[in-house]
Amino acid sequence: MELKTKINAVDGKQELVITRAFDLPLELLFKAHTEPEIVEQWMGTKVLKLESKNHGSYQYETTDPKGNIHGFNGTIHEFVPNQKITRTFEMSNTPFGIQLEFYEFEKMTDDTSKLTMHVVYKSVEIRDQILKLPFSQGINMAHNRLQDIANKLK
Figure (cartoon, rainbow, N blue to C red):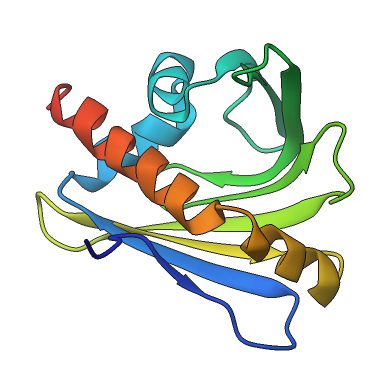
């Protein structure tokens, strides 16, 4: 089965470009990234803090199958409703460090929209380590859940 979320990783670069078209209106796709109750459902995480605004911050927590708790956090540097979010992302207790993420939300039709995520890592080596994880399958699963959960909110 073809994965709907596409990941473009150019060799030798420390970045990824991730794109996904959704059968969702732009406003609903954006809301799914900014409303804690919706984020918790499709990401499968607990939202401890989510300040969807310029200079806001966020903090998420998830528990793996072994019961270990993992934290995710960052700062929202730019927040333009229904257009873009620029933020940092850091996962605790990993060697990956902080990454910079540029999310762009684009209206395609009244009922469809597109998300483009441009992710910049500290080094090519870190980016390549991320790609060795089941990263593409994980982000596809999360985006599929986002589509399913947001469909119920239409």
